[in-house]
Image 1 (cartoon, rainbow, N blue to C red):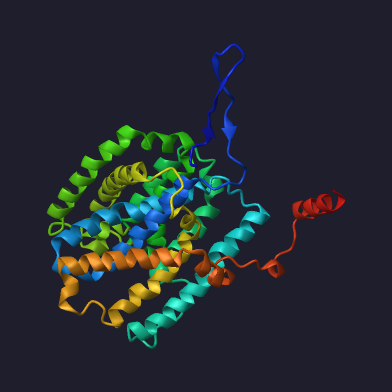
Image 2: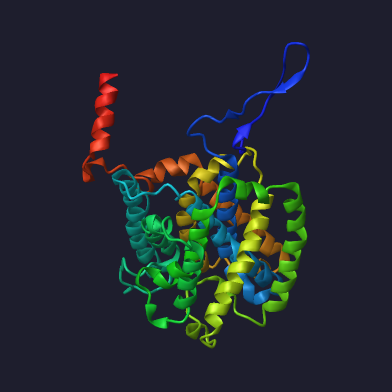
Length: 371
């Protein structure tokens, strides 16, 4: 269940009904709402990648693509920020940061480079850990964001400061590609927003009124996107380039940062309003979204090299539906427990041999032995 507490009603002596105290969920139990949201967001990420080769042939696909890109990664980043609130740079958390982000980054950056040497026919492409390739930018960005969490927890106005940083980043094409810092800075406000959110904020968007309002909002977004497709670049939602690199005047950058931030937040709220709060058949898959995110990239890259988009029927409505469903099924399969067991050694390595036990770990071990 996804509510913070459950209230039960009991009958007191004399037949009067009274409310029992809140019953909290067992400690450590995962919240179904957030697992559902992460799973649905990662499905949209995979679907968005599957639509890329179809955009030139369909304005409708391009509009859907623009809307999805306006909120799927922002939603994922907001949730990542929300679950980073307790990061305090303690030895245990630093260790998990290294094993859960840094190690997978090194492995998949190398793997993607070697794989795309073949699919892109660029046999001399170097392995560069400073230039994130394809999907690995998110690992590098999340590593940096989490390291800076203690700072954002102490700044007086964290979200305005993060927005100013993002706005200034769009003015500088010289930031370069090192660790995809441009994208890290431009997506920063979403992570900082997640750090500032509380459970009651998520309860607001899960009300029935919010679910109903989300319908016309999404419909309006699709209409606007359909109009905007030939008139503006959807690359503004990638947050990876400066205004100059997008062939726009410099002042467009700060303005578009605020515009896209506002649009994305509205759509993220609508998306979360539709996320079910109860356990569903896909809830458990929410714990494996990073597996689906990183692994589906090999298929997304290879599909073009293997010629999967060459048949004419793929670019017609039926083909577009088939491609969409295939992407959803693929990423779903990659989030399942069997796949996670196979790749856990690289995605969640223990690496106890690489770290010294801190004083708290030794104290806990002594207490466990004495008990």
